[in-house]
Length: 334
Image (cartoon, rainbow, N blue to C red; front, side, top):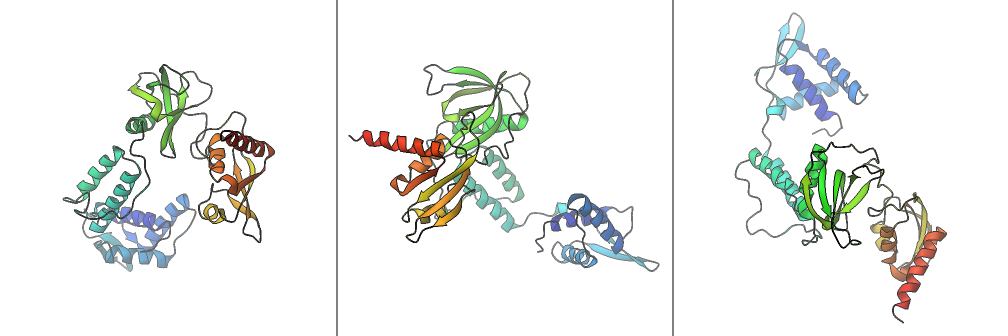
């Protein structure tokens, strides 16, 4: 099957044309219509040979009943079965199995109730498809924390974000002895190290709030009007953040670290962040790595995890904070 990005879209256009029984479609008409639509979406064109190959694919691979008729010197294409459409084709057994595998993988990552809804859809696509192969061994396993608190709220929060529902949340932070109730507009669910957070707006707030799901006591829908997110872009806001916290006034900055040869392969094969790049290699195997990140607690925790094998070179503020942490930690063993 061709794999260029507009292949499926071309088939959709051809299908729409051939289902239109009120017009005769010559090959040139089909080419013109496809290119008109391709220009609108992708700013590209398909050649005559490409459209001919698409028609051949529909006939041979999709068993499309494409007929031809001559009117004068012109040849026109049409569906011999007026009820046919590639959108009516049943999904193949192997495609159902791909979906089943994907569901099983997702279930290992997190046991969302929404996965059951997806599985119900798959079962409608193919009857009597077993959820698991009886007696079959595990093929893939993910690290997960089965006792993670607050995970029961994920489905309600997911739905509230999707449907733009205001929530009444009873929340007890680690800092307070008594729970508090918030009117809350949820905007984004985010996971970090098997712990889930919801980012949203408290009533009348001038900035967003991050709540840990394991500190939520209850959730109820509120009749208040939902206020849409005008604080941040969920697609990009956390691009330069490890974890979820962004200290007030902090902006992304260049961070340089030196990693000893023993740990270098681990950091190089499992980068701390996608911005990671090597700026220097030493003969003894040590490397200097540059990152572009916000200096927050989660970043420092990651760096501290490498112990004596990692040294922060810059910025000076992060270097001093790391030094102070190591000194205080050493004092605990005095």
